[in-house]
Image (cartoon, rainbow, N blue to C red; front, side, top):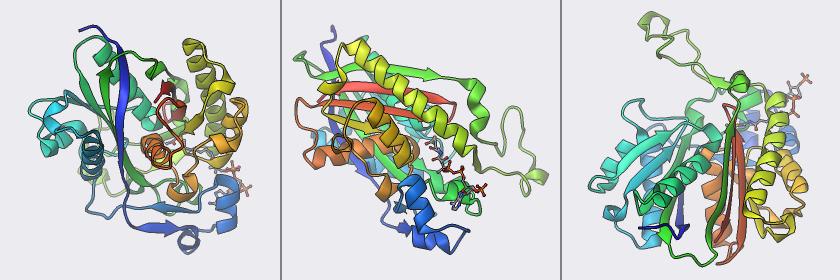
Length: 330
Ligand code: ACO
């Protein structure tokens, strides 16, 4: 069947109930609420319980999205999951979520795009639908950043947190709505700016004797990441607008990756958008890696800030470094 257009039918989300405030972090590392708010915009974040992993979180967000789309799991042809914090490395997180949903055979696989992973997943779903291979995809981001955070490192532990988001993506008749443009890039030369050493991998085989000393936490060169983040998100803005032939002032709402309010403000300024036309929730959730955009989309839609026909611009960056943008008319 030829492609008409590819549309987000619904968005779902799940966040843990447990709230960790900046005041709580003041008791854990040498930091202050004032420093965190001024430098990052974050006031509080959600932290999942020890026994809740990304399969559970992603499953709940996926169920929410399916219910909102009024679809049974059997309607899903593909499950594409973005996570930097899988419960286990084999099989893919998507396969474990497929088992929970019981779709009856949907293809299920993960993408490793760090914070850009959900927009990568969306673009892969768009391609699978456009090429006629599938009709319906579930694009899920599920991130338990608290599990890989060094809670003694004040430079990172104030930033990251846990959340999951999911969207049902489907073929639809062309009527001007749907995904209008997609852009994906990476620069592996910048990988050391934000990385995590494995406990066992192809280059560092599992060694039981070293488990006690090996550091498996996320490490980041914050200032360098910051500079590259602004540059790459602005590049993604230009790329998708040019692809779609859309001017900056036509954008109804910018839904950016929520890493730091200063990065968001710099991107909005570049896109020529006042902050009233930008969805910001980094103050309440912190940086939940690739889950930030679906969670923000969900909230913006629920708040009535995304209406049918709204022109929505999403841009992101993450470890890799990776960056991406998607423009859609809801
Ligand atoms: N509390 C108090 N002081 C702190 C803290 C803290 N939590 N963290 C760092 N500092 C100190 C530093 O030690 C430094 O002190 P010094 O001047 O005595 O050396 C000072 O504050 C300034 O440090 P900078 O790193 O220059 O602070 P900056 O203004 O750059 O803010 C931050 C740091 C918030 C990390 C910022 O660089 C940033 O947001 N970078 C991007 C991070 C990011 O987006 N990461 C995720 C990207 S990908 C993904 O989403 C997975």
